[in-house]
Image (tube, rainbow, N blue to C red):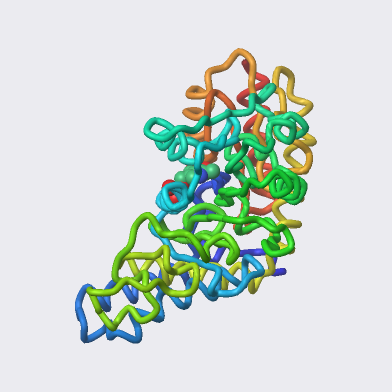
Length: 380
Ligand SMILES: Cc1ncc(COP(=O)(O)O)c(C=O)c1O
C-alpha cells in the first residue's frame, strides 16, 4: 500500500482531518470524474448524455458496489442517500404485525422509518438499551424472538464504533423467521465485506463517509430470496428491465434489485462513487483496514493515559476512537482544536469526541492530535 496519499487530497497539509465518520475527503481523481460528467451534462444536455451513457452510470456503480460487497451486480440497487434506501426498504417490506428490533444508540435514520410505520400499522418497535453507549450483544440476541419481523442495525455504530457480530445475529434472526436490515455507511470503505457469506438480507451504504465520494449516492444489497416477491413501495421509469421502452401501460419489474430504483438523480455523484470504490479497492480494503487500525491503536494507547478521559469505543473497532472528557465542554474542545494554526477536525457528538482517520492520514497526524489533546485536556 502507498503510504502517502496527501497528493490526492487537497486539504491534508493544512488540516489534520480526522473526521471520515462525518464526511470523508474526496480524492482529486474522483473529483475530476464527477466534475467532468457534471459539466458535460450541464453544458451539453443530450449531446453528452445519450441513452447508453445514462444507463452506464448506474451499471458502473452497481458493478463496483458488487465487487466491494462480494455479490452480483443484480443484487445491488442505486439510491441517492442511505436514509432514502432505508425508507424504501422499510416501506416495501410486508411487516405484518411483527416486532421491529433495533437499539437506542442508532443514527436516527436507522430507527425513524420503522417508528413512522408503527404509527399507522399494528407493530412494535423495540430499541434494545445500551449501557454506557454500548449495546450488550447477548441482550440484543435475546430480544430477537419468533415475534420479530425485522432486525435493523448499523454494522458499525456511528458514534462509538461498536461493531456487531452480524453473522451471529443474522443466523439467530433467520432461525426466528426475521430478516436483518443493516446500515453499513459507517463500515463500507474500510471494513472488508463479504455479504453473501454474512447472509444478510439488506445492506445499505452511502457515498460520503468511508467511501470518499460526494453527497448524493447510496447503494443497497437486497438478497434475491427476499426481493423476488417484494413489491417496491416506490416505482418509476427505472424500475423495469428495459427502462428505455418507456411503456407506461404495464409495470413489469426488472428481475433484479434494481426494481427498487425509480428515477433520475445526480449522475455525477453516482459515477464518482463508482470511481471512488475502484480507487479504494485498488489500494485494497484490507490494507486500508490495517492502516486505519494502526492509527487508531496509536491514539488509543495515548488517550487512555490522559486523566479524566474514558474511551468508549470497543477494542474491536478499526477506524475510530470515541472518548468522553470530564470537566470540559465538547464545544470548547472543538473550538480549541479548530483555532490551532494547523486545525484538527474531529466530531463532537453527545458530548463525546469522535476521531476517525482514513487513508489520507499518517502517523504524524495522529502524533500531532495526541500532542494537542494533551495540551488542551491536561491544562483543564
Ligand atoms: C449510521 C448512519 N446512517 C445514516 C446516515 C445518514 O446517511 P444519509 O445522509 O446518506 O441519509 C448517517 C450519517 O451520519 C449515519 O451515520
